[in-house]
Amino acid sequence: MWMDISNIDWHINWTEFHFIRPKVLYLLYVLGFIVLLLIIGNRENGKWKKVIAAHLRPFMFVKGSRWSMILPLLFFVVGCVCAIMGVAGPTWKKKTIPGQKIQAVVLVALDVSKSMLATDIQPTRLDRAKLKISDFLAANPKARAGLLAYAGTPHLVLPFTSDYKIIRLHANSLENREMPVQGSNTKLLFQEIDTLMQPVLAPSTVLVMTDEITAEDAAYFTNYVNANIHSMEVLLVSSPGGAAVPGFKGVHSQQDPAILKDISNHPKITITPMTLDTTDVGGIAKRISDHLVFEKDKKQDDKEWDDMGFLLIIPTIVIALFWFRRGWQIQWLLLLPVLTSSCSVNSKEADWWYSKDYQGQVLSHQHHYNEAAAHYTDDQRKAIAYFKAGDFVSAEALFALDTSATGTYNHGLALAKLGRYDEAMDAFSHAESLDSTLKVKVKQNFTKAQHAKEEVDSLASLKQPAKDLHEKKDKKDPLKEHKPASEDEKLASETKVDKMPKNGDRATETVKSNIHRAQEAEQPDGKKPQKEDPDQAVKDIIMRKPPADPGEFLHKRFVLQKNRYYKHVQQGKEAW
Image (cartoon, rainbow, N blue to C red):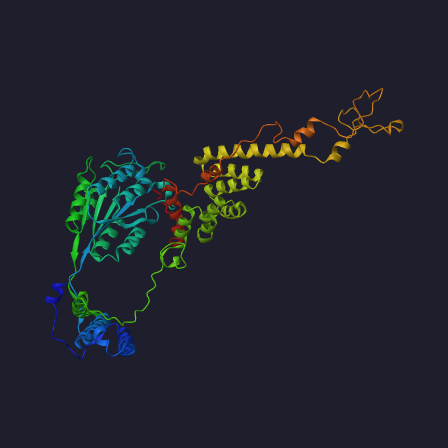
């Protein structure tokens, strides 16, 4: 702050003096109202003294100085005026921006065309280029790096970032099969490079890793560096003798030395042959780090003004220090209530401090699952909260919206809880077909659902209506009730008869059979069911996980970009 004070132009140009935030000055009206209340309140405080007897007043009150009342109020007014005017931002001079230091970046453009699959450099040119990217980042160029992959169309893999680890991860996942258009379109490549590097104000570097530069490519290289402040580094990933391109009979990929020599003469283009060690990429990283910082010239901003309000904050702080002295306080000040509401997620103002999903997460940890579900905005988190709360109907409806492997698996769990076992088993089977890593969990819950379905079906077959038993027409059925003949109409179960029917039918009031006993049993085999762990179903719920290999994701993204930005780009005759 003292450096700023020493550089202040104390000559105030009153013709240009104004406040940057003039609406703040309306607080002066509020201050005037408070001072008026203080004066009126002080008069009112003197009236109650008359209630005390006159001869007792000298003993009840200590006579104070008039200035002891005026000075605190005066300092309060002066301090508040300074604070208000300081916040309003007085200014009389336009802001001068000092030399701005800007850090350079490096854009790595990797050739992923068919010719990079040649094996003159083991294991392939492309695999070795990816290793070189890792070595280049390990050499620490100290600049933010971006990654671009190109073949028939160029595609940005990662924007400029300082996280080299994620660049390595995505670079290692790049393969030729991920490119939507085969070939090598250098024209589109430099159009994309120009778009990405246009906002970069510092002279930066474009690092191209390719196996061959044609005469047409060399023209694009030269035209780009001539029209921009950026320089170019080229790492040639091929052997001098070249190699055959896999899948293309008679096609031999080899760098023309004459073209390479011609383009190397340009001062802003550096060609680096690939080496077995890290000397090649190490030298590139050093050249980039040596020219990392660029400083722009000073200029005067036509739109912004120097805010000199901090000068008025200084006397405000000095005046505020007097309030630590004994007796220096305004006792009659009407304090404006500042509602410092609770920051708890259970408070009414929780939305001021927390997002809905965070509130739901906290409530879920507190086992208030229904309340958590009401707060979640994410359907899958809401579904899991409903599942934990035991509201399987709502959970099933929300899980059904997610067609991923995880969503289908969770949907199966909810269906099983609702007793819809056939649908649950179908969901489990479908989830396993979408993601084989769910095989263990699917097998466990599939078996549970299958056993539960068998038990339900078994009990359902036993619990038939009584009339079904009486409608059996098989006379030899030993469980069939005997219809009494005319001479037996007065017989009852306790009546003795000389002859019982030989076919096993009998006239009884009650029939004790194994079927009836089975209906009364807790399970068909008479065994008590094992108590299920109530938390086990909750533990089976899994959240959606992103794929570990970003290769498939990059392929889908490249196809989407091709359909959006390169609709009319077709594969050329030279598909390598």
